[in-house]
Length: 116
Image 1 (cartoon, rainbow, N blue to C red):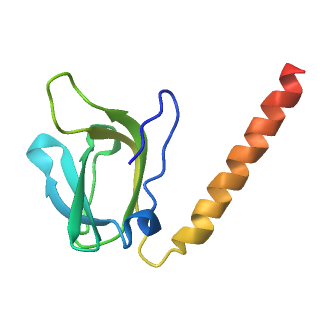
Image 2 (image 1 turned 90 degrees about the horizontal axis):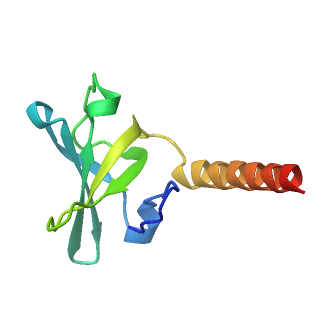
C-alpha cells in the first residue's frame, strides 16, 4: 500500500494477486481487518470503522475502503481511517477502478482550467 499526503489511495486487489477480504471485525475496538494473499505471503490492513458505523460486516466478503492512512510514531502498524467501507462482492472491481480514474482525470482537468 502506498501513502501520499492529502490524497486517497487505492489498494487494488490485482496488485496483491487476489481479492481483499474482510477476515475479522472487532466492534468493541471499531476495527476491521482486510486480508489479501500474494504468492505465499499474506498481507493485512487494519481499518478504523468509527466513521462508518453502524457497520454490518460480512466476514469473507470482498471490500473497498476509502480513507486516510495513519501511522503513529513508534507504532509498527498503519491504520486506514475509513470514510467509505463497502462490500463489493459481485462488483467488477477493475471497471470500478477505471471509473474512479476517469473521475479523477475529469476533476483534475476541471481544476486546471479554473486555475488558468
